[in-house]
Length: 234
Ligand code: ADP
Ligand code: MG
Image (cartoon, rainbow, N blue to C red; front, side):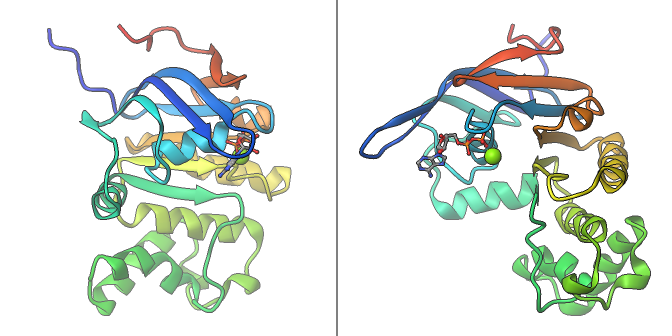
């Protein structure tokens, strides 16, 4: 039987930040993530979690090794090609929401479709559908500063979903939220994962990691532990 293609495959990924004192952050990371997995990445501050997520999201390059995204080698892409893969494959969620303050909830959710050249009427209809899925339809005309942290993050999730990505990458998505709101946002992310979207969450909160199905610990530039063993690279 042919081996199914991993959604994400890291082979011996190395990344060094050059500077006065070069910093070797990822020291040969091997990792396989299958379609539909719900994964958290943990590790001390400075252990390379965001670096790893930026490489996964084609926001940054790695130095050596191979990164395959859904079977495609991601290496030295020009910005046009990188943006094409990002837009097709990946939705991002950030700790600080990254909403645009002078756009209302609907316009924020619709923004990725603007960059795809979809006409305003159509993108607003779609944005309302995704707001509705997040239970925020009645809030469409509100601006980010009129919304709670949990509402803002749900708007950011709707914005990440509207381009129908295969993967969601979330960097500390609950880092700015209280524990009740954290649970609500994790409920939403779990439901999104249950629709088949591969979900990768960077967190330093164990309560968040425990809600995922697989916990990967980074330490000193390598994977120190991985709670599932049946996804070993064959
Ligand atoms: P984490 O997200 O686990 O806290 P990061 O991936 O952000 O860790 O950072 C890992 C290490 O790399 C840290 O020591 C950080 O200071 C350093 N670092 C991160 N980004 C850069 C950069 N653009 N240039 C130089 N050093 C960086
Ligand atoms: Mg970080």
